[in-house]
Length: 312
View 1 (cartoon, helix red, strand yellow):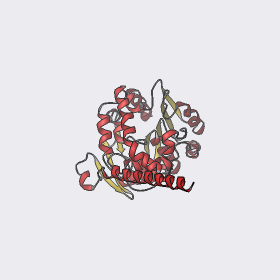
View 2 (cartoon, rainbow, N blue to C red; view 1 turned 45 degrees about the horizontal axis):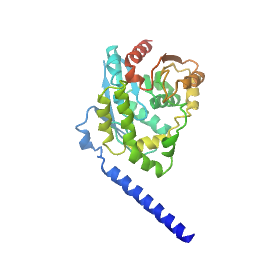
View 3 (cartoon, rainbow, N blue to C red; view 1 turned 90 degrees about the horizontal axis):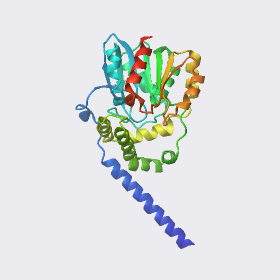
View 4 (tube, rainbow, N blue to C red; view 1 turned 180 degrees about the vertical axis):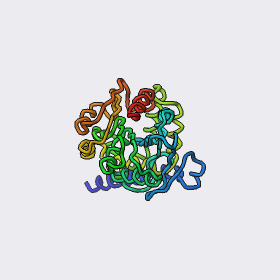
């Protein structure tokens, strides 16, 4: 028995050592997103308390301010098929990369609801935006803007939610395993990039995303910190239960609409019933047959609704 236990212990040690070495090799292959590197990257940059944020403004300076808040994994280029339509309609658009994504810094912090609220509040303050703004949040960004509105109602003119997080089914399979300390870090380092790129490649092949989506993803994946930021968000941001924030927005009477694909399997359309119950004043705009990629796969439909809603 002792011999068997010694053998098992030896195997465990070898496996753990192999995981440790492979993890650090994977990390070492990534580049640091330094100020020197950032000089050659597009867009503008602003320093906040937790690091530097990548952002841009587009549209007339006196236009109706619309702040675009992207979701969990795809940074601000997720709005590439929406921005021009919004600015052509006279809106002043602000888009930015969350910390940990795109060309923003990847600080080693807890990516929870307070983090995302602080990020948006500091960004608006740093850019001198003091008047109420229209917040458009997609996927996790939808949960972000609901949380922001619940905490800072005087800063919000209107909420526009696109397939918003907050009532998402709990993680399953490998995603659930990723929540385990140690094992999850290794799984993300070993499999995170390939999993993401396979998903993007499939969307491009099926015509639900433009070909440049692949190149855009590869650009951000080359920098260290993207995958750990996703993992921290998975572990700390309540994708499945933002009911308190939604209900507070409902009680405050903040004007709100939701745009949602009826075939969305990532943030299921069935969740719209809970959103409507929590925010009675919300107006729902279903897009028949659209999936979670709705902002770019059904951009014309989304743009038409956005422009109409923002005119009111």
